[in-house]
Image (cartoon, rainbow, N blue to C red):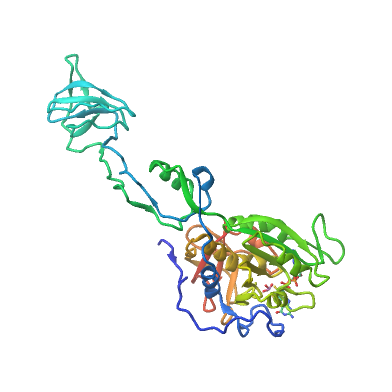
Length: 420
Ligand SMILES: Nc1nc2c(c(=O)[nH]1)N[C@H]1C(S)=C(S)[C@@H](COP(=O)(O)OP(=O)(O)OC[C@H]3O[C@@H](n4cnc5c(N)ncnc54)[C@H](O)[C@@H]3O)O[C@H]1N2
Ligand code: MOO
């Protein structure tokens, strides 16, 4: 059975307005019930996608458009194919045979005459079929006699002719605005005669990695932790549709370094901050956003891991995505908020999630979506081993993240976010 699409458009459930500075919450086991104010995971995705206005469009040469997003619908100004086209090498024939050969027509040339019944031209695949011809007789079915006549079965009318406009009449819409530009779309645009496309560029993203305990090269020293997110995020940002301009390491102290770094990234549409999303003494992100007058869009999500994630809009119009410091939690948060935000900025639809059976051992949690790495063999998904909030092993070998709903049981379907 083909996978069906998950209820990405589930009916909205009223939730309290987010508040960036939340009261310190009691420490709960990772799969405890949702805390007050946590937004359901499905709604967090939708809210992040709906938050931005699409970024302004620009017109670029075809070669520069791949990977970007169509800002205007792609239309063909002329019919496709543009003329009646031979689909086989052979003879374009008129009326019943045998047919007298009047000439030949190769692809790219035009035979200007018109055929009368009992006449034909030798024709190449892709050549324009002359007026009067009613079908093409493939060369394998034809016998050219020494008498200048071609013999063979009379083909049914229209056989092996691609009629002008049969693929698309002039003016047809071929791809709507919001379509990602893939190699096939580039070829289609060229077939229509376009040399440029009007696209929305990939949003520019700057990454600020916080955490004074982090080492950025080699094995970590005593009590220290190797930064896993700095190396992972440029590729993740690219996979989610953005362009990572910079990864900067920001010190937790003095307080104010992070604020200065966030405000110093005005040449990016999105600032991603890793770490600093929690309630510890050095976790400054919510405080600095509140002080900056940022508009909270998502402030904690009813999912595990990754619940401290946040999305806010700065008064300048820039976007801040807060990813928890635990590396797997950060990956979950990036797929939950950053991917949909970037899609919204590009004018793309929110990616529909295939709903597939998931097997494995996991205790679902009341009121929470659990995000787990899964391997997927095309028919079903299996929960991969090794998925702590701080441990990337399962995610590193997984094909997707499954969004396990609270009422899931082993083998029941769950939506998949494809990660490869
Ligand atoms: N009192 C509470 N403490 C914590 C809560 C809570 O609700 N109340 N939530 C826990 C959860 S869940 C998470 S997730 C973290 C989120 O914390 P932060 O976003 O502030 O991140 P940090 O505290 O800086 O780091 C958490 C953890 O991750 C390691 N880390 C950070 N950055 C990186 C990196 N780039 N590469 C590898 N590892 C990284 C860091 O060393 C910590 O071990 O808060 C919990 N606490
Ligand atoms: O579990 Mo925390 O939710 O993001 O590591």
